[in-house]
Each structure stands twice: as structure tokens, then as C-alpha cells.
Image (tube, rainbow, N blue to C red):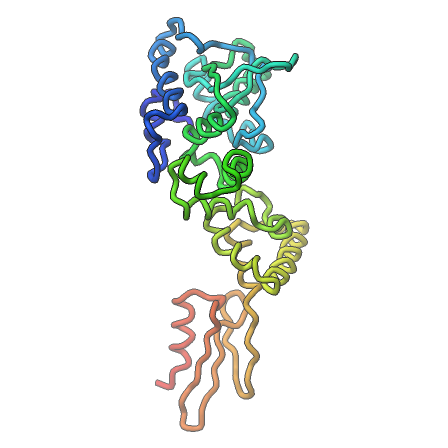
Length: 325
């Protein structure tokens, strides 16, 4: 996330993922570095360096592989940039674009900086027509454009795992021949992390619909759900639960991402049948958290399900109440 009006040199360091450092000869790092060198001039209001200029945002369009979900850009989600631009009376950190050919409606394609582009357009439409869009113009291939975008946005918290996973999935097929090993090597990422991220975009559509907002689907949630979706029986059970969640949401109920994930996983756990003489102890949710049976000698046999609908403290309290002491 753009952090106020700080220099890009420090922001670039913070936005690098801990797992990677780009090769110093890579085009993406060279472009980031060249842009960084213009910021002092921009901050003082002096003429910016060649290839960096102010343009009309209406003459720009997002690159087809940009990693922003445009439907999620709003006054609320861009409030920090709006306030920052108004305070500075201009945009300070330039976006990265490349020139377009054969498009009469647009001159530039945005590689990195879609959120800044949206913010400038919003300001111009809300009583601030003086704002222009600051861009650094580069000539790069599609694969280089993807890596540049990835460098700038790698650790930004305002980009969801879902957005990043969708972008990486498209890039995997288009630039790396479907090879996760090749992609991980080019991006200097661990293969395991890349695989976990791609799993976010590989969830079945029927499961995705259970979430009110796809941005709620994180790498951690996908880690719990994706392996179960490979089992036909578990997938069927989760699909049924996803349908119930959707119906409940239509009725006005609201569920967080972790709550939806927990229900989907729990739906795959088949309840054990209660044996003769067994009794149940229910937790705060009204669901059985354990079963017990008393033996002839006064002993107690306690059964706890693999994934009880209770916390550890609640389970221990229920067991303590059953002990014949």
C-alpha cells in the first residue's frame, strides 16, 4: 500500500517479499531504480526526468493482467490515497505505464499503479479537475511487465490473496508454460509458497460462492479447503453446506471468511453414531461436543469427536463435570 508521500526507495525495500531478492540485472529492478531517481525532483516541484510525465488519466487503461479487482476500488478502499493526494496537492509516486499502439481511445497501458489511476479519476470527478496522473513510461514485454507489477505489489496488504492468485494463475499459463518450478525461479519465490497461493484460485466455483466476498478467501483458508475438494465425497458435502450458507446469507445473515471455511470443513466430518447407553454433552452452540457412558463399576467412558464444536476450555470443563470425584 502506498504509504503517504515517502520516497520510493524505502517503499521498494519494504515491498519486497522476505523470500526473494530480484537479480540485480533484471529489467524490473532497473525500471524501479530509474523511477526512484526522479522522486527528489518531483517532490520539489522541478521538471521530472525523461519518460516521467503528467498525463490525462482518461487516456490510460489498466493492463489486461493487472492485479487489481476494479469492482473493489471505491472511495472507501482508496481513502488513504485520496487524503494523501489532497494533502500534497498532487500524486507523488509515479505509476509505471507503457505506450499503446492502435488504440484511438488510450495512449498508455498501466502496468503498476491502477489504484493511483482510479484515485486521480475520482478526484477529477469530485471537484478537483486540476489533478493529473503521474507516470513513468517504459518499453517492456508482457513477461517483464508482469514481473514489474509483482515487484511493486508483492507485499502490499491492500491486494487480496484472491487478486494475487488470479494474476499468478494467468501468468503461469501465459509466461511459464504452466510450470510452477519455472515461475518460482523467475520470481525468486519458494515453490511451496507459490503452490499455496495458486490453490486460492483453484477452489471449485461452488465453494467460492459460499463466501460473500472473494477477498475473504486467503491462502490459509484455501490450505484447509483445497485438499478436501479433491475428495468427491468431501466435495459433495461442502457443496451442500455452501448452498446452505448462501441461502442463510440471502436471509440476512453475515459470515466472515474464517466462519465460512470452518463450516465447510466441519461439513465433511461425518458424525459418529451414538452407541446404546451413551449420552451427549452439548456446547454453547447447541451441538454435541462429547459423548459418555457410565460403566457398571462407576467408571466413565468419554468419546470426543475429531473436530468438536467447542474450545479446549469448554471440553475440559465438560469432562471435569463428568468425573466421579
